[in-house]
Image (tube, rainbow, N blue to C red; front, side, top):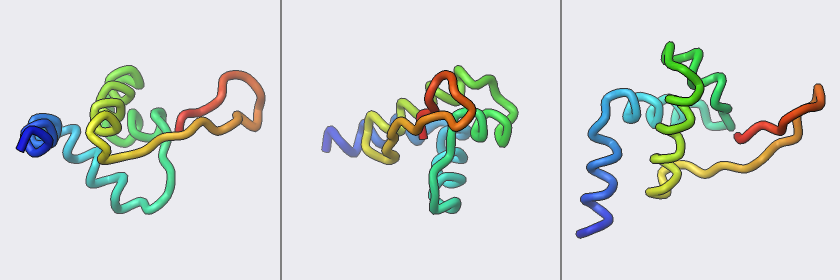
Length: 75
């Protein structure tokens, strides 16, 4: 029951629910910048939404090396 409440609380946000639906339809990895652009939000806000979805197990992430050098991407 406690897990159901956590999931409900996370998905209660319209933007977060839309992000989850977008990711589930993509069927491949997305990054923070793609989510920020798609939903017209700041990357830090996108990162927050993605972290909350990951905390309840709705999405998974991994680090991918940046082909141009510099900081790696979280996919």
